[in-house]
Image (cartoon, rainbow, N blue to C red):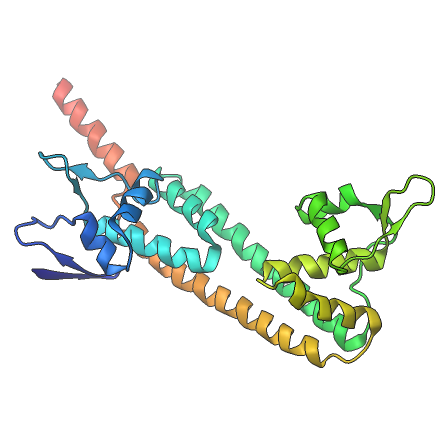
Length: 264
């Protein structure tokens, strides 16, 4: 056995492999199953692998780069976005991949801004600035990108407290209710359970002590910082994968030149 060390990590090469990697070689290096490697290829997260004359998959160091890029992107961007980024790269749609990365960074920036707004609300005991006027469950759900049923679940948990319209019975969300819903939404995205969010919302509502909320906010800040660092790590791994991939423009040019020569 020999070791192959690249910027994508270290994998074990089988003797007489000719530089090819088996699914198990990639899997062991990252603590995965061989089925996971095959699933990633089938999903377009890894580039297509050639087959040996006996029908076995023959991976290469390029696949090791791709796997490393994907796994590091997952930590910062989440599984769904990381998978979409890798699929775009593998179909030579790099601009689409960069747009997805930009959108993820924009979301992180928005979360940071919301965190600052929450901190200000707790520190100054003032509501998060919002537009004036009441709203209903449908428009608020669309604004947050959630289902109306989720808002009703939050209501049952006491996290939002809309009033009922006297004539229609519809839920009516005031400016303060929208503020509470925004805080709940951001904290849920930060990984907090409803039971953990309730004390923070109560602190904002009652303008009481902020000690219980301060700990949650410090943890939230730590999560955002970790996500930002993970995005940097993912960017470095993705850049290494891009460098390792063949230039599609150069490949197309070379192919076209060869065909022209053959015609002559």
